[in-house]
Length: 241
Image (cartoon, rainbow, N blue to C red; front, side, top):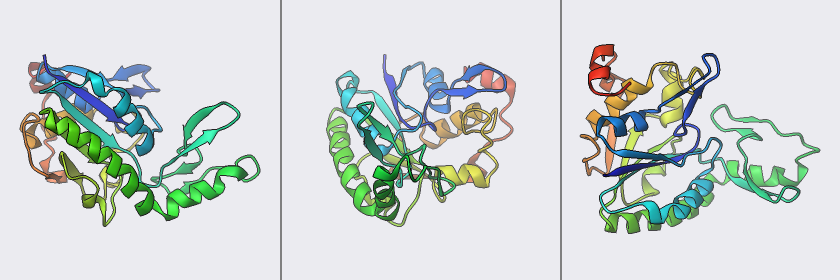
């Protein structure tokens, strides 16, 4: 049985609704269910792209010929730092809100990493070109094993299309995060997402990727591509809920 392996940050993690106290299948898992593929989720909320790379390397031996990987890449200004007291590598996500461009750190408590956060924010092209060079090497190896690769950038930049030479970029205007915000899809009801969107997004991704068989370099997604008339009956029949 083919497997879809998902990596990423909170936009790709298992979703959770605080208000209704239930877990929600994200659109990639719903897509895997529709195709009768096994699904493995290795996305973790707060991950930086460096941490996503680490998770991908650790899981590499589990990805087999004919499988699919789907990556929700994180913000270009998000990095990692070493917590010497707890001996752990941590993300900068709790110290800097990437999507709102807000610094959340305590200048006294986090004085030792403020310069590092400034580096990630002000030198994102340097940091990301180096990280994605490593990611690209892993993806080239997976492509040689006939693994299909799809990814979404939550962020955008003038150099984003230079980052990877393999895989299919499912591209949203201004990056996935801002696209969600601009269209009212980022209401933090199911993790970051507006409640009820995951089946609709699953339908969108399956249609745009031709059930994950497309080999385009870039697939552009527009708000007009979304079918808001996907009915409950249709979703049940297609096993999307």
